[in-house]
Figure 1 (tube, rainbow, N blue to C red):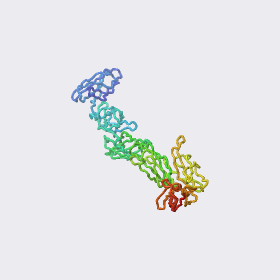
Figure 2 (figure 1 turned 45 degrees about the horizontal axis):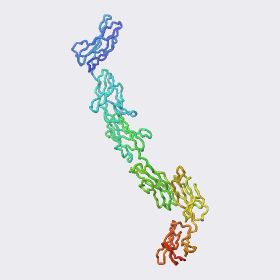
Figure 3 (figure 1 turned 90 degrees about the horizontal axis):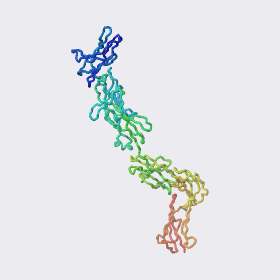
Figure 4 (figure 1 turned 30 degrees about the horizontal axis):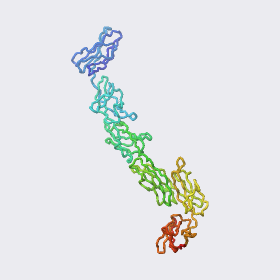
Length: 555
């Protein structure tokens, strides 16, 4: 059985003027096929004219050059010599020169993982759709430049074509059919481009905020923008906030410093449920200020009753903008008091006066302030030594942060200067004889790797009290056995008693340490035998005393 060919579509190449008719071929059961003939006319009143003859029975298309680019009407005729039938004609078709309708882009976004620009669209409604042409707009000329023809419903651009970090990319599409008739190119879309300008964020350490800016999404009206971020601390994205569609910036409060923050902006279409566009990512490393080069306390040592010496080393990371505050608090208090609000850089010593060194322990630290005036680094705390006595036991707490093995208790005669090691390193210390006028202190020391002492801290002194009577002679003889006029009281320490000697007319002859006494001279010359006036002033923490009277100097 012989069947006629069936014309499907006629496509015209506008450049060459060649028309191609696509068809279903005839069947030739008796093997008598001779040829195909292609006929056409460019108007309904003209007769059909032969355009082409040839082909084989299985041909699915026939082509011919047309004399003009009008909308020709075509049909194909199959010639046979079988059963007395020599010609079978197809139906007629017109040249398909009608392009598909306009198709709009859904959105243009940036893929979060690859940072490549991606355009997406819905399927065109026409039955005859062969694919979609993707265009970019040349920024210099404004012309649409073909990037790729694709049959898919999205296209992922190479970064060499579109770098998502740069703004102003404009993307369009057009539908084309099987005749390569291209539809109208849609209005361009441009994705959001997020940026963080370092010049606008120089004060982020103080403000603890970073400013993001972005370009507006082009292609559809934006209802609002969502701002998303992730910290390198856990790399989990969180929504930082939302702004209206006409706002193109956002200040993000930085949760912590010294982490890298990754941001992207998501545009949400007005009245477009689920239609969004994601920007490129913008990175910001929120570095904190550099730590001080040096920030340490050497010791906090009791140097005299009520006075504590604190040694330190402080070196800021840069010459300007940073400050170091020397602070202290009582051991059982949480309130810090600033002693010095701007320690000089380098090594130094600060005397902290008027403290209750015989009753309380004190904690010292250096608080480093950055140029924002915010404390951001502290030294290691040092806790002063406090020595106390209960009965025959001397008790103290370890000096921190020195090693508890590097401490000892020392003893001296109350009126002497030489300290002798008597115990340690661990408290308590048992006082063998409490009837002697002795003083005790604890010494803590820091060592280097070779066990050499490199720093020392002292506690307050605890002195034993024996009979508290000040003995004052009424005469002395520089050439005799009693060569010096001086006081005797084992509870008085050097520096606590001053003696002044006057002649009978009130002229001062000598003044000095009462424990050492007067040798009967003034300005290096011996005075004559006779009566003289003395004045002895004693200043001790627990009391003050004044003694006045006369004495006899014998020669």
